[in-house]
Figure 1 (cartoon, rainbow, N blue to C red):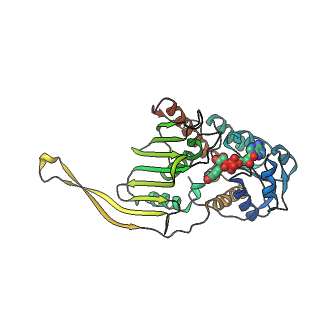
Figure 2: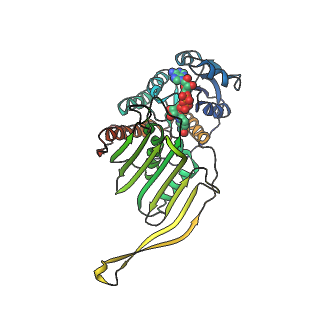
Figure 3: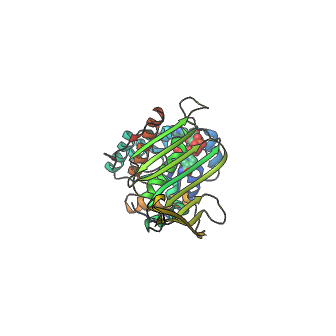
Length: 351
Ligand SMILES: NC(=O)c1ccc[n+]([C@@H]2O[C@H](COP(=O)([O-])OP(=O)(O)OC[C@H]3O[C@@H](n4cnc5c(N)ncnc54)[C@H](O)[C@@H]3O)[C@@H](O)[C@H]2O)c1
């Protein structure tokens, strides 16, 4: 997967944003600066009114179909609830628009694969907002791992918890763990071969508020995700343990989000054979906090989308990448239903 991000400002590209709830206005803000925000749309009039005064040059719509038919647009950003993505992305691609859709791309890997095929047929860019691929801290982890500075990777761990922001249409797995699976796939540049998960739905029947997920990646790399909407603490943490170094990313940590622990275990022949053939010595060095250029990930993501449209190429976090995340989320659901039964994954047909 490509690991460099292009940047572009293109005032000739006309972009529309649909979904002006919690997240969509952030897209509107970036695209109004990087391109021409020609249309904004939300089915709720109150949400539309709240945003429209900020963009007096944009046309306002309550109906997405109407925006597609009437507004001069090259691309649309879809920031509506996940359960609506497949329908809206299909409509946008069929209307000949490039699409940046919020994560996760949809609720079915079969349907999301069809969206990828539709984008290819129409020669349109289909990108998905797996924002953490554009996060400077996560990119630093990825570069450090790609340069083999951590050595062989043993395991990864992630914790993504907060209190509230319960979604009515998808569980905490689709809402939050979609980020972690995307981050792990990006960091390891591969996909899990098996998942097992347990979770529980205390607040709404059938919509898990908590999940503990174990993923097995090729090369005996293990990964674990803890996601919850019912946690007293807001935490966003990724940990990578290799045989040369250990890395921790903590969003919002001061003085920087990445910590590099110079920790590794040395194996030496045992002095007394009855204690085993080897003895293990945990070694400890410095903890380094690298200085990073902390650009807003959503802005970097918007630039990558516009560059992919202009250059007519696949973006980082394209439909195929996102569709494979959906396949993992489906397997997690399947495992949770079977109380943690391991589910094997194949990559068949997703490219
Ligand atoms: N990448 C990230 O870090 C990140 C962060 C937050 C949310 N998200 C994603 O963004 C999406 C939206 O999340 P949110 O928190 O803003 O949700 P939200 O419920 O706050 O807002 C969704 C908005 O979409 C509107 N809407 C729904 N269906 C519509 C339709 N057919 N036509 C027009 N408008 C419609 C609703 O009226 C609402 O205003 C979700 O997929 C979520 O997973 C991503």
